[in-house]
Length: 266
Image 1 (cartoon, helix red, strand yellow):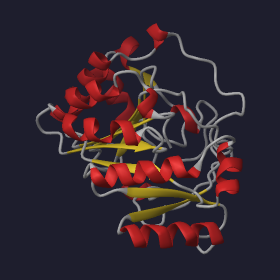
Image 2 (cartoon, rainbow, N blue to C red):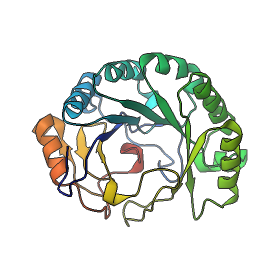
Image 3 (tube, rainbow, N blue to C red):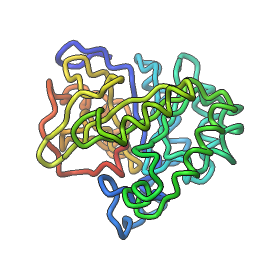
Protein backbone atom coordinates (compact mmCIF):
# COMPACT_ATOMS: atom_id res chain seq x y z
CA UNK A 1 0.00 0.00 0.00
CA UNK A 2 1.31 3.43 -0.94
CA UNK A 3 0.30 6.72 0.63
CA UNK A 4 0.16 10.08 -1.17
CA UNK A 5 3.90 10.58 -0.62
CA UNK A 6 4.81 7.22 -2.15
CA UNK A 7 5.73 5.67 1.18
CA UNK A 8 5.17 1.92 1.36
CA UNK A 9 2.78 1.32 4.27
CA UNK A 10 3.41 -2.22 5.50
CA UNK A 11 3.19 -1.86 9.30
CA UNK A 12 0.03 -1.86 11.43
CA UNK A 13 0.10 -1.10 15.17
CA UNK A 14 -3.00 -2.33 17.00
CA UNK A 15 -4.11 -1.07 20.41
CA UNK A 16 -6.14 -3.92 21.89
CA UNK A 17 -7.05 -2.03 25.08
CA UNK A 18 -6.61 1.39 26.65
CA UNK A 19 -6.39 -0.08 30.15
CA UNK A 20 -3.13 -0.69 31.99
CA UNK A 21 -1.90 -2.17 35.26
CA UNK A 22 0.53 0.74 35.73
CA UNK A 23 0.00 4.52 35.78
CA UNK A 24 3.14 5.92 34.12
CA UNK A 25 3.20 9.68 34.53
CA UNK A 26 3.81 10.43 30.84
CA UNK A 27 1.11 8.08 29.61
CA UNK A 28 -1.75 7.35 32.00
CA UNK A 29 -3.78 9.59 34.36
CA UNK A 30 -3.21 8.78 38.04
CA UNK A 31 -6.87 7.82 38.45
CA UNK A 32 -6.82 5.59 35.38
CA UNK A 33 -9.24 5.92 32.49
CA UNK A 34 -12.94 5.33 32.04
CA UNK A 35 -13.57 1.82 30.79
CA UNK A 36 -14.82 1.52 27.25
CA UNK A 37 -18.12 -0.27 26.81
CA UNK A 38 -17.45 -3.89 25.89
CA UNK A 39 -19.47 -3.54 22.69
CA UNK A 40 -17.39 -0.54 21.63
CA UNK A 41 -14.15 -2.54 21.65
CA UNK A 42 -13.17 -4.44 18.53
CA UNK A 43 -13.62 -8.19 18.88
CA UNK A 44 -10.78 -10.54 18.03
CA UNK A 45 -12.67 -11.62 14.91
CA UNK A 46 -12.89 -7.98 13.79
CA UNK A 47 -9.20 -7.38 14.44
CA UNK A 48 -8.27 -10.52 12.52
CA UNK A 49 -10.44 -9.41 9.58
CA UNK A 50 -8.80 -5.98 9.56
CA UNK A 51 -5.34 -7.52 9.65
CA UNK A 52 -6.25 -10.04 6.96
CA UNK A 53 -7.35 -7.24 4.62
CA UNK A 54 -4.17 -5.32 5.39
CA UNK A 55 -1.95 -8.32 4.67
CA UNK A 56 -3.76 -8.92 1.39
CA UNK A 57 -2.83 -5.34 0.43
CA UNK A 58 0.76 -5.23 1.65
CA UNK A 59 0.91 -5.17 5.45
CA UNK A 60 3.76 -7.40 6.56
CA UNK A 61 4.30 -6.34 10.16
CA UNK A 62 1.82 -6.11 13.06
CA UNK A 63 2.51 -4.94 16.62
CA UNK A 64 0.02 -5.35 19.45
CA UNK A 65 -0.03 -2.48 21.94
CA UNK A 66 -2.33 -0.90 24.53
CA UNK A 67 -2.57 0.36 27.20
CA UNK A 68 -1.08 -2.89 28.36
CA UNK A 69 -2.02 -5.55 25.80
CA UNK A 70 -1.45 -8.51 28.12
CA UNK A 71 -4.39 -7.52 30.33
CA UNK A 72 -6.80 -7.98 27.39
CA UNK A 73 -8.64 -11.19 28.22
CA UNK A 74 -7.81 -13.93 25.73
CA UNK A 75 -4.85 -12.09 24.17
CA UNK A 76 -3.08 -15.41 23.52
CA UNK A 77 -6.02 -16.45 21.36
CA UNK A 78 -5.71 -13.25 19.32
CA UNK A 79 -2.01 -13.91 18.80
CA UNK A 80 -2.86 -17.39 17.55
CA UNK A 81 -5.48 -16.01 15.14
CA UNK A 82 -3.12 -13.39 13.71
CA UNK A 83 -0.10 -15.67 13.43
CA UNK A 84 -2.16 -17.98 11.23
CA UNK A 85 -2.65 -15.26 8.59
CA UNK A 86 -0.52 -16.18 5.59
CA UNK A 87 1.74 -13.37 4.46
CA UNK A 88 2.16 -11.75 7.88
CA UNK A 89 5.90 -11.87 8.39
CA UNK A 90 6.33 -10.22 11.79
CA UNK A 91 3.99 -10.32 14.80
CA UNK A 92 5.27 -8.53 17.89
CA UNK A 93 4.00 -6.93 21.08
CA UNK A 94 4.91 -4.00 23.31
CA UNK A 95 4.41 -4.59 27.03
CA UNK A 96 5.46 -3.38 30.47
CA UNK A 97 6.55 -6.96 31.08
CA UNK A 98 4.74 -7.56 34.37
CA UNK A 99 2.60 -10.45 33.10
CA UNK A 100 5.27 -12.08 30.96
CA UNK A 101 6.42 -14.61 33.58
CA UNK A 102 3.04 -16.35 33.36
CA UNK A 103 2.34 -15.68 29.68
CA UNK A 104 5.59 -15.65 27.69
CA UNK A 105 5.66 -19.35 26.84
CA UNK A 106 2.01 -19.42 25.78
CA UNK A 107 2.50 -16.32 23.63
CA UNK A 108 5.50 -17.92 21.91
CA UNK A 109 3.59 -21.14 21.26
CA UNK A 110 0.69 -19.09 19.83
CA UNK A 111 3.02 -17.51 17.26
CA UNK A 112 4.26 -14.27 18.78
CA UNK A 113 7.74 -13.60 17.45
CA UNK A 114 9.18 -10.93 19.73
CA UNK A 115 8.49 -8.30 22.41
CA UNK A 116 9.47 -4.77 23.30
CA UNK A 117 9.48 -4.17 27.07
CA UNK A 118 9.27 -0.75 28.69
CA UNK A 119 12.04 0.02 31.19
CA UNK A 120 12.89 3.65 31.99
CA UNK A 121 15.08 3.09 35.05
CA UNK A 122 16.54 0.35 37.22
CA UNK A 123 16.22 2.43 40.37
CA UNK A 124 13.35 0.94 42.42
CA UNK A 125 12.24 4.27 43.92
CA UNK A 126 12.33 6.11 40.61
CA UNK A 127 10.50 3.26 38.90
CA UNK A 128 7.77 3.34 41.55
CA UNK A 129 7.51 7.12 41.11
CA UNK A 130 7.31 7.01 37.30
CA UNK A 131 4.79 4.18 37.24
CA UNK A 132 2.98 5.42 40.37
CA UNK A 133 2.86 1.90 41.83
CA UNK A 134 5.12 -0.48 39.95
CA UNK A 135 7.91 -2.77 41.15
CA UNK A 136 10.92 -2.82 38.84
CA UNK A 137 11.70 -6.42 39.86
CA UNK A 138 8.44 -7.53 38.22
CA UNK A 139 9.69 -6.11 34.91
CA UNK A 140 13.10 -7.72 35.30
CA UNK A 141 11.42 -11.08 35.81
CA UNK A 142 9.36 -10.41 32.69
CA UNK A 143 12.49 -9.69 30.68
CA UNK A 144 14.03 -12.98 31.82
CA UNK A 145 10.82 -14.82 30.94
CA UNK A 146 10.80 -13.32 27.43
CA UNK A 147 14.41 -14.35 26.86
CA UNK A 148 13.77 -17.88 28.13
CA UNK A 149 10.69 -18.19 25.90
CA UNK A 150 12.82 -17.03 22.95
CA UNK A 151 10.64 -14.03 22.10
CA UNK A 152 13.64 -12.66 20.29
CA UNK A 153 15.04 -10.19 19.80
CA UNK A 154 13.88 -8.74 23.11
CA UNK A 155 14.09 -4.96 22.93
CA UNK A 156 13.83 -2.44 25.75
CA UNK A 157 11.96 0.85 25.33
CA UNK A 158 13.49 3.53 27.55
CA UNK A 159 11.82 6.95 27.72
CA UNK A 160 14.29 9.79 28.26
CA UNK A 161 13.80 13.45 29.16
CA UNK A 162 16.78 15.03 27.46
CA UNK A 163 19.48 12.59 26.45
CA UNK A 164 20.44 8.94 26.35
CA UNK A 165 23.41 9.99 28.48
CA UNK A 166 21.11 10.53 31.47
CA UNK A 167 22.08 8.35 34.48
CA UNK A 168 18.95 6.19 34.30
CA UNK A 169 19.32 5.66 30.56
CA UNK A 170 22.96 4.67 31.00
CA UNK A 171 21.95 2.12 33.64
CA UNK A 172 19.37 0.64 31.28
CA UNK A 173 21.94 0.57 28.48
CA UNK A 174 24.45 -1.27 30.69
CA UNK A 175 21.77 -3.73 31.80
CA UNK A 176 20.78 -4.40 28.18
CA UNK A 177 24.42 -4.98 27.25
CA UNK A 178 24.81 -7.50 30.07
CA UNK A 179 21.66 -9.31 28.93
CA UNK A 180 22.74 -9.12 25.27
CA UNK A 181 19.47 -7.43 24.32
CA UNK A 182 18.70 -4.25 22.42
CA UNK A 183 17.54 -0.90 23.79
CA UNK A 184 15.74 2.00 22.11
CA UNK A 185 15.74 5.47 23.64
CA UNK A 186 12.49 7.36 23.11
CA UNK A 187 12.46 11.08 23.81
CA UNK A 188 9.53 12.27 25.89
CA UNK A 189 6.79 13.39 23.47
CA UNK A 190 3.86 15.80 23.69
CA UNK A 191 0.91 15.06 21.42
CA UNK A 192 -0.81 18.42 21.87
CA UNK A 193 2.24 20.54 21.07
CA UNK A 194 3.64 18.17 18.47
CA UNK A 195 6.93 17.62 20.25
CA UNK A 196 8.65 14.46 19.02
CA UNK A 197 12.04 13.39 17.79
CA UNK A 198 13.70 10.40 16.21
CA UNK A 199 14.01 7.26 18.30
CA UNK A 200 17.60 6.33 19.10
CA UNK A 201 18.14 2.75 18.07
CA UNK A 202 14.75 2.45 16.34
CA UNK A 203 12.75 3.60 13.33
CA UNK A 204 10.16 5.86 14.99
CA UNK A 205 10.12 9.60 14.36
CA UNK A 206 11.47 9.45 10.79
CA UNK A 207 8.50 10.97 9.00
CA UNK A 208 9.92 10.74 5.50
CA UNK A 209 10.13 6.94 5.76
CA UNK A 210 7.15 6.28 8.05
CA UNK A 211 5.52 3.00 7.05
CA UNK A 212 2.78 2.62 9.68
CA UNK A 213 -0.90 2.98 10.40
CA UNK A 214 -2.52 2.64 13.82
CA UNK A 215 -5.74 0.94 14.88
CA UNK A 216 -7.40 1.92 18.16
CA UNK A 217 -9.22 -0.51 20.42
CA UNK A 218 -12.56 0.98 19.37
CA UNK A 219 -11.88 0.69 15.67
CA UNK A 220 -10.41 3.94 14.38
CA UNK A 221 -7.74 3.50 11.74
CA UNK A 222 -5.38 6.41 12.26
CA UNK A 223 -2.79 7.56 9.72
CA UNK A 224 -0.38 9.26 12.13
CA UNK A 225 0.36 9.46 15.85
CA UNK A 226 0.48 13.25 15.58
CA UNK A 227 -2.80 13.74 13.74
CA UNK A 228 -6.45 14.03 14.75
CA UNK A 229 -7.61 12.01 11.75
CA UNK A 230 -9.19 8.62 12.34
CA UNK A 231 -11.50 6.45 10.24
CA UNK A 232 -13.93 3.96 11.72
CA UNK A 233 -13.68 0.46 10.28
CA UNK A 234 -17.16 -0.26 11.59
CA UNK A 235 -18.88 2.79 10.14
CA UNK A 236 -16.98 3.01 6.86
CA UNK A 237 -16.02 -0.60 6.26
CA UNK A 238 -12.49 -1.95 6.36
CA UNK A 239 -11.51 -1.14 2.76
CA UNK A 240 -12.74 2.45 2.93
CA UNK A 241 -11.12 3.08 6.30
CA UNK A 242 -7.78 1.89 4.91
CA UNK A 243 -8.24 4.02 1.79
CA UNK A 244 -8.94 7.16 3.76
CA UNK A 245 -6.14 6.53 6.25
CA UNK A 246 -3.66 6.21 3.38
CA UNK A 247 -5.08 9.26 1.61
CA UNK A 248 -4.88 11.39 4.75
CA UNK A 249 -1.51 10.28 6.06
CA UNK A 250 0.43 13.56 6.42
CA UNK A 251 3.90 14.14 5.11
CA UNK A 252 4.92 14.90 8.68
CA UNK A 253 3.08 14.77 12.00
CA UNK A 254 1.97 18.01 13.60
CA UNK A 255 -0.12 17.59 16.77
CA UNK A 256 -3.10 15.74 18.15
CA UNK A 257 -5.82 16.29 20.72
CA UNK A 258 -8.01 13.35 19.71
CA UNK A 259 -6.14 10.58 21.54
CA UNK A 260 -3.57 9.88 24.22
CA UNK A 261 -0.61 7.52 24.44
CA UNK A 262 -2.57 5.04 26.53
CA UNK A 263 -5.14 4.47 23.78
CA UNK A 264 -2.98 4.54 20.68
CA UNK A 265 0.09 2.62 21.78
CA UNK A 266 2.77 5.25 21.16
